Image 1 (cartoon, rainbow, N blue to C red):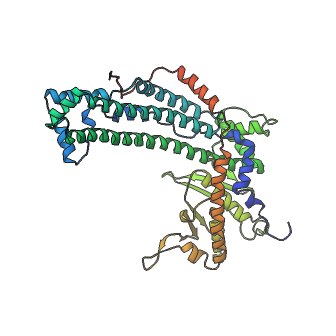
Image 2: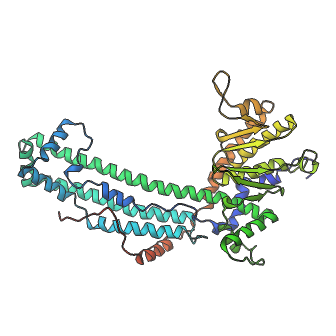
Image 3: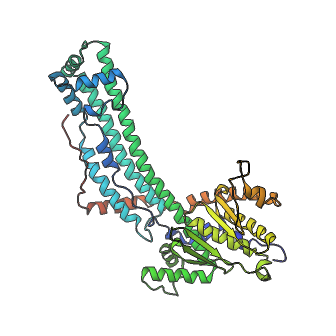
Length: 461
């Protein structure tokens, strides 16, 4: 490699190389670390849906609407007939009752599948499966809304109900006032439907987003583990040892290096639970957790007299810092404080710049990076003597290296873009959704009927 700098170690950690390393172990991807999906979303819809006149004009400030509601709540035969008509129109269909039970069981079955490690289905297959469960339930809600509006319109147009409504509100049967009041009831029902559907969508979308984030984090961890496993013998042994200890099983040495068995092993190793790591330069990275739960990672860099390390054309200092930052990023952290300590002030500043570059290459956004050099803090948002916020990383740490700072801005954008691209590429579905749906159906079939606080009762229209 001559006297020129080599990016061999640095490039091994970029998103493209990590993705290529991980391609051999795609079957290690799973969602086992994700929190269980909530099963109350359809129950919540049933609880909150309007069932009678009490659900109309809630929070309204329209005097006409409030007056109509007040008059229809009076105890007289006409008002009672209208209330009964509204209640009948809002009766739940058998499909809602069935979906209420099916949704709880389907989500319970789904939560069993996502806990499989290694997963039998890719994360995106599982996410697609959850989306189908959600969409099927949503379709039942939409149909119920359509039925309610149709039924209410038909009820209000029945001669007997029309006459009762006109009498209860003291307006003429053929009057514009009566027509307006009917429209107010129907419009308020539609408005309520929109809110109910939005609430269901918001709740279930959060669950899907949660799984997407879990899949992305799993991909980050597994791709970094793949690099460590492939390129560092000590780390490979640490991963194997961790697997054996946590799974109470022996790993056949002859088989562990083939793709299938390695994928099974990597799937059962959580990057975050390791307490020591070794980078590509064979320097040890240690993790400790304080009483407050804050994680600290440290690496001991050799003294500058170690020329084989500091003058290596493989940029070992930057490589080790990048490895440490990558471990922190892949463990789910979106911000980082990187501290460097060297007795030589000039050398310390140079290593501080390396630390910032390492964080950028790991995927951190500039606004979430703080660098400390011999105890002095450089921050992207720091108030100066005049109370104005300044980026002291740019103005002070890189004061003598502005071109390098500007170049890292472009590097960071490329890295973050590549990370997002490889997230979707690496966790692509294996097109086994139909197979998964059949398995879910089998699990559901064996489940007892769930109990629920919310009950949807069917009333004939």
